[in-house]
Length: 458
Image (cartoon, rainbow, N blue to C red):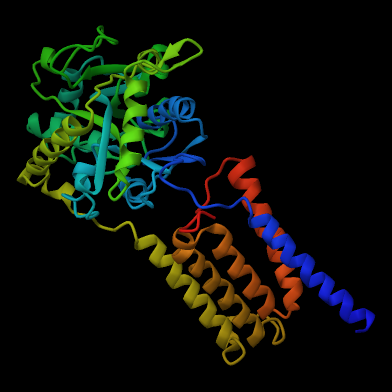
């Protein structure tokens, strides 16, 4: 055997040894040792609102109780469809927890999704907050009666926001308008992804009103940047006793929003029981961080809590869904149950645009007018094929990453693409073995970003 052949064999053995070494620690997870890696909480609304603050507060205490990192991801968009779909359709292995909000019991009545509360395993409800109406401190409106009188004379002139179109705060304001004898469109609703950005828009003068819960506006309210005209509750809130209710102003209209923690359907029962036990300890105040329990931290944040666990939460979800269904299918709110565009319209438009661009590139040599500034040698047939292969690789990863895991899926895609682009097979293997586990270590362990682990646990 010549020296070159011996070097080649040596490289192959070293490569094999390196593969075995890197994958040695990638043992699959089991129910018995749950949890043994980071957990993700999917929040369907943006940073700054009550749901986001609840998610992050709960994540801190879960991390303390379960002994693994707990990350919160804000999956916004689609009027709440994006976050709820991502949470409830996640792999049911206990490593993805979902925060659901009242919108889950509204979206299917509005024909936006087929998801319902039956697609979730209820753990506990957390926040239950009545809607309230806020104006900027310079606003001429001092109470709800003044606002009502103005809308009567100037219908359609004022703008309001607080959440996505058709969300709970939109429903709350539209319900008050209907109760007052107006049309739901007499105050123009500006869709936004949650109370946080909505309140910032109000403070900057971008809208006239915001409808959301008092705790969500606590910071701006206590600093005097916004003023609350009334809260849609039967009695004044304990934390904000100075704020008048709608009832005390002669308007018998009450509605509230809520959120809670659930697991995807199909999660093994032992994992459900372990998560439920941990959350119960947290909501009972038995877990302390710097001498402060979860209920105390929530009260300090001004969040109105209502802990309904397991079956009680399930019963509440069912009755709340029926109540909102009757409201949203009534004649007064029929227009809010229709949609002009669905959550897949924009991804579809992007995909269509990509097809058009690739088509133009493919025929640009024949129809030079499509790209008059591009030389004949700028785009080649092989270049177009390579672009398509990259897109196929991305689609392959999106389709199979959850089942096969990040390391296997990304490794296969990277190896095949490098090989197809003309790299020697052993160089492809070396780059894949060094690069993919390195990326996994960086994101999954150092940056604590959970990546799909698949059926093999890696």
